Length: 300
Image (cartoon, rainbow, N blue to C red):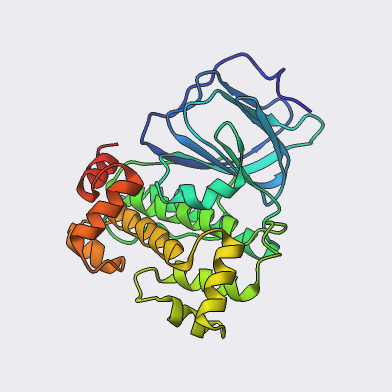
């Protein structure tokens, strides 16, 4: 099934940087075509029925429990899957936080299209609730209590986050969506990794700023340091300390994006003893120093 015959009428794309979120339930004939792609990222979460999404030359069918993400700048089309009765889905047009790239990268299938399929049944309700919270928070003015969320978002709801607080809260909920979907995926291709190594990887991800060492991580998973280091490197393709450095840099990027903490405090909170070493390795990873990275994100 291909999307070549979708409507040629071009649909507008939300302005760059705007956070727009909603929930639709569309019948046969619904189709969107953006020959120039979008300036934002598009996140779709299917709750029922089926959709057909194409980005560039890459195409995917989305069913219940599938998160499909379309990166900006690539022509895309999407529609109710031909033959399906409907397509019910939550969606968000917004900028993507840089740190999400590491979570989505294993699910890239080409042309900046990421498909996280067959998510675990235990997280589906929570993901749908997170989208509902995005809609509620996007409407918050910053005064009084945020809007209450009762169950799933109503079909047809659309909200735009105009205020800073509303925007950041909505993005935090979307970060939860991405993490939940990518953290526990059936058939993720990691069943061959030793459970002790996966546990150590989880310890690093849960608290990258902690004073982890090969010895301390090995002790937590009941392996000798030498055996642990060998297994970790063999099965994950990088050493434990390299994985720790990568996790610390991602954590630092998230702090720079979401807080106004001074760079020195970001470094310390991310496990770097020396701000100078932190700035050097951060520039090597992201191409700009920490302060420049924050200015670029805020300016975007």
